[in-house]
Image (cartoon, rainbow, N blue to C red; front, side):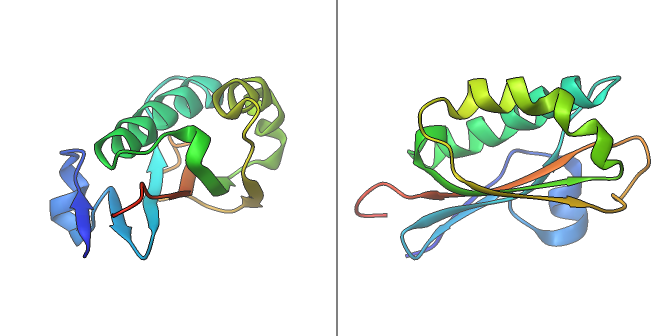
Length: 121
């Protein structure tokens, strides 16, 4: 069974994607950017959106097994570390950070996450 989760974002319908898809025992959360004036604010905002999608799937950050961070400037990653450590706590997932261009220069970080789905999903 596949469950598709929407956050109601305008680009989900425009581009044709789901914020998250529950399939194969996992919750696959699409790359998510956040709002804010700096990378830390955008990181927090993106994590809030991801957290809401996980909640709709019956999961949480404690279920995360993989996370990918995409930033146009790798030097901006370190200021996010305390936010990420707070979010994942004692349950850190495997992680990768990639320096690359994002869809719009105003975005400073994009986060993509995979978590274990609840049993029976």
